[in-house]
Image 1 (tube, one colour):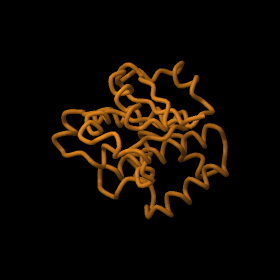
Image 2 (cartoon, helix red, strand yellow):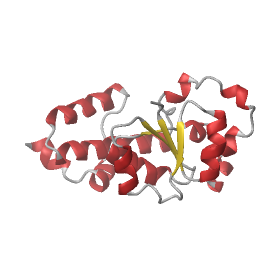
Image 3 (cartoon, one colour):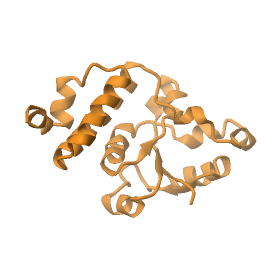
Length: 175
């Protein structure tokens, strides 16, 4: 009954299971290891993705497609150099004692702080969710996403993001 935490490497899953035993840790096996077959097995379960720092764009896309959550813990707590290196959650955890993580901090579940990089990926996520609502012709979900976007302090999604990540929604808006 534990939430499932997905990381890239088997090593990371083993280390993280010691630090954060409240999850069932599994590894995707590689940056591109979150295949459709693997993700379908996880449908209906609470799944949190812990991508390596260089895999956020790809894993955000997967999360949007399958309704998974993406942890931004090590994204929020990494330097520019660490981001360039593409470190994973284990690289952060091993800096501390496992006892430091006895209780999964609620603050990790909060949205990323506002900055251009985090805002971009949040907007991409909303655009892809809008596209999914469009494809399924779910106007209630579509409206709820727009309300969530506004509540988060955004005036809308820039046209370039919409054209790339939600091209069908322009006709949906006009219907």
